[in-house]
Length: 194
Image (cartoon, rainbow, N blue to C red; front, side, top):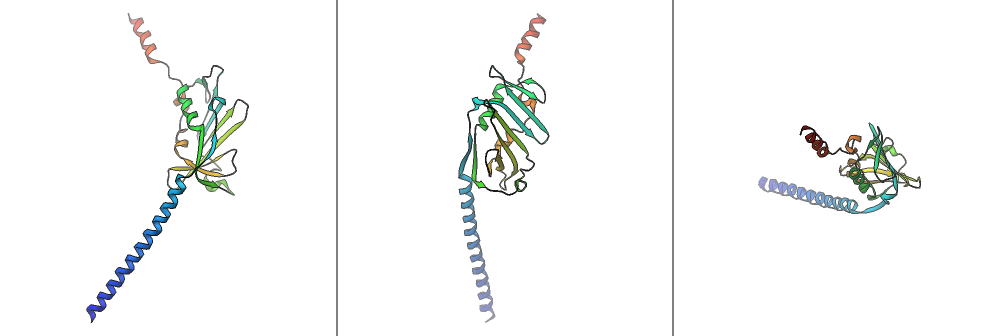
């Protein structure tokens, strides 16, 4: 009789564990499906013409870079010190910022602090030929570390966007300055030696 009772208890425990794992996994799949749906849904924040931009201001907690477009369509670094900017590098930043998309949904808020936006990690401000401005602020990373909380100056809500956008501005002014052609200076040195 004891064998049967032990067997019945073990079978009962096995069925209980089996039920638990079935329910747990089903719930987990539902959550994963919901997160996938949120992650794939996107909406437009802005879509701008980069030809109309005349100034770019990039702020991080410990630095600020300001760039101004010149009359000949080249760019100049004006902060922290004046230097000629590498056109390709500036255009690469503008290409990233000409279209901004949010993912998931618009997030209403009462306090920017809950998203790390009261003291942003970084901001990008674009000034246009008509003196209008657009700015995006970056706050805390999302739980998945792929997205980052952000807020655009002309939107009343917070949104998640690709963290790559913030990573793109983790630069120093030296990274944007125009590199002098080494080949021409090398040739000049060789000519002097002859």
